[in-house]
Length: 441
Image 1: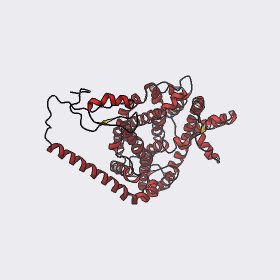
Image 2 (image 1 turned 90 degrees about the vertical axis):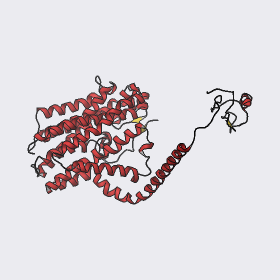
Image 3 (image 1 turned 180 degrees about the vertical axis):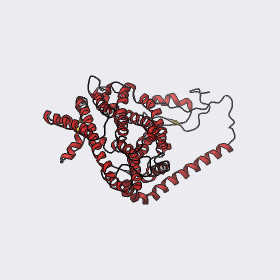
Image 4 (image 1 turned 135 degrees about the horizontal axis):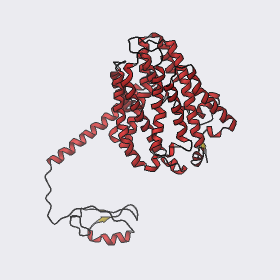
């Protein structure tokens, strides 16, 4: 029986958010793109050249275009995936709209994507990037291209329209404002686009791995379906490990305009590790996670938190410190986007008292583990090699089957005891060091 993804919202805004799937991109993609716009506003000098009012008008128009582009892309994807979603019992709001409402909404989102560029600074490069973004979004799911079912091409499409092209468009458009010289941004543009591509690849690869079972049932031949879980994970592992290296390069390139950023990044990553370890409940130690779980924790719980919740607000705070007129943009950002600053004040400070309980738990656990290791190591070092006759073998084996057959077959081995059920395994009551029922050497 098909089940809707969430309860139907009552307000028009809520319904629009569901139809455009704003929860997938508003707090996760938009702040990352805006962060690079804020960097351009910083300018090369100690005080931003562009005024806060002009910057705010640019941001409002730019965000309006982002909403139009992202909403249009997600809605088109849901419409052309409707049949596959039906096979797995998934209901998308866009697929349930009537033809008139669907056409009106698509037209409105298309106009919203393009109209702001009539007032935003534009150039042939800007229009080319905007057209490329829309083409990638449509080509991802619409035949005859439908890159979603063309193996690794789907990963390249998704990574490009999710991060690479929007960030390139941000640099191209904002750099045409009266922001001062942008000659120093060359290294940042190169490193940020390379990092953005790896971030997008990691995100869509794990998304397809998570959807593997549903895509198989729906008959959708994605990259992950073609490779299978294990091979797909092996392919994405180098990309996931390269991502933090490239982000480090981005941070170093940003020091040209934000000299203290590397220090802030170290503190934020350390805080995030502390937060996951001691404030998020009794989270498993990284030593207890398998390779896939470690990659997911690194990418989705640490790096994404830095990109989405901390980097934009740090750049905005730097703007506000250098030009107090930008403080209202700091407030606006914290109100409309999820961010680390508000999370620290509203959640982390309240959870700090619980630190003593998780600290006591883990310190006791690791002291016990250390004592066990030390005790076992001492016994191994003190123990002498056992003296065993050359013709003696030692082994452990399990015999399963009806009880009367097992009894008959194991009588030559001496004393045995029955398992809890008639078909359970049996174990010897004394070492079978000279048993001739089997040979191990």
